[in-house]
Amino acid sequence: MRTAPADKLRLLPWTTPDGKPCYLSTDSDTSRLSLLADDVEAAQLDSGEQVLAGARAVLADPHAGERAVRFALRRATECLADALRVAASRGERIPLETPAP
Image 1 (cartoon, rainbow, N blue to C red):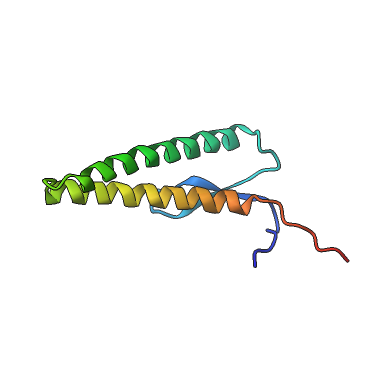
Image 2 (cartoon, rainbow, N blue to C red; image 1 turned 90 degrees about the vertical axis):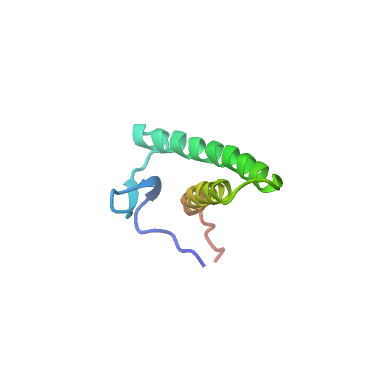
C-alpha cells in the first residue's frame, strides 16, 4: 500500500550522471521544471512507440541478423525503463483517498 509522501516530490524522467533518480519539490504542476518534465515524458513515450514498431519489424523479418535483433532489444529495454519511470512518477502523483472516519 502506498502512503502519501511527507512533502510533494515528483520523480523526474531523467537521472543524475551516475544513474541516481532526480526529484522535484514543488507545489505547482505548472512550474517551468514540471512542464519540462511533462514534455520529456511525452517525448520518451513517443520514442517508445517508434522503437516498438521498429522492434516488431525486426522480429518479423526472418532474415534479420543478430546485430539487428540485439540493437532492437537494447533500444526496447531503454524505452521500457523510460516508460516504467514515467508510470512510477505519474502513479506517485495520483491523489490518495482519505479513508472515511
